[in-house]
Image (cartoon, rainbow, N blue to C red; front, side, top):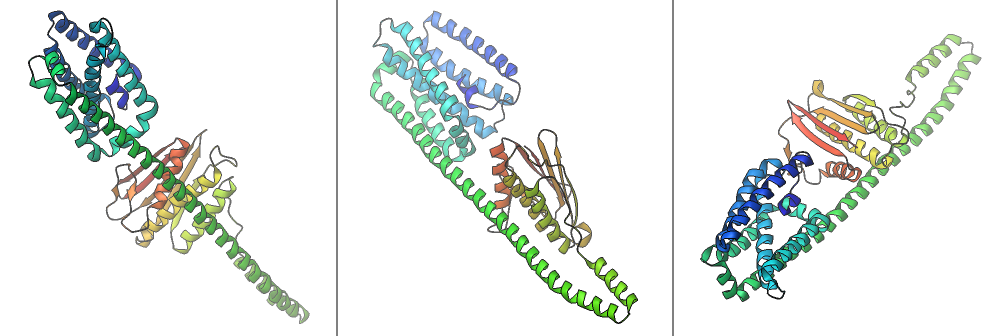
Length: 401
């Protein structure tokens, strides 16, 4: 149960519970046999060997990679050793030690499972992601426990003769895992603070883009008003001199050169403003774009964060295709609303794209890559899914929130 608590199931719960029931039944039968024979030494050794066998057999049921799975197994074995040792010594304080030891083990394992499931699972997930730091400590701790369990021919005598070193080893195990979780909790808080800073910085960048777009619009309006005054005076002069045809031609030429009305890409104003900015940026760089944005006026997610995410996707795509020859300069951004928002951004690329352990693209340029982190933070905050893919010369980002 502890091992299954530490791991992330790959299949439905019924399959996981079925495997657990089979394992529990086999282990119970094994324990009954050795208890009836009074062979506690072989029982302890066989329990460890049986658990290692279970770890190998049940690996395909869970999502962890091999090294992360080893960390799960060694952590469960260390908890097992601590529970066995403490229950043996504490049972002497109660009547009927042969029965109280079972109760104590149930309590100790129950506390361990409760702590991991309710309080320590997010932190332990971080430990599993940094297995290279913590795996060696877990292995070393288990080897010290295994030395005592496998060295003697009488486990009861071994436990009685090594009270002090075993209790010190138990204390070391508790302190080691306590230190790991305290460090991870601090690291997790620092990561959350860093993610919040990235979000704030991205919000500021989007705001600067908008302000820049507004300033440019105001400047263009001022120039247009100034030019319109001169244009009107010119038309008035031509009409007063009877040069009607020249006035008509000039008006027609001016009408054709007038900027088109701002296009409405979607119903949501912040996203529409962001998309308008980046489509203009793409147009100036000769980048073709295909946009289909089915975004409601009031989405269920924070609209500013959504606009920032769309901006990051388009900005990354524009930066990527701007390095390509003209025929390959194009990007596609589709957003479908089906109760959930499904986004897909696609663009050609050249060279090799490297992904980190979280599946995010790694930027080779110093200072870049914050856009992808901001997108990942937004998707994580919404409880959605994010997939990056580079295949057959196309870079694709899929988001479902």
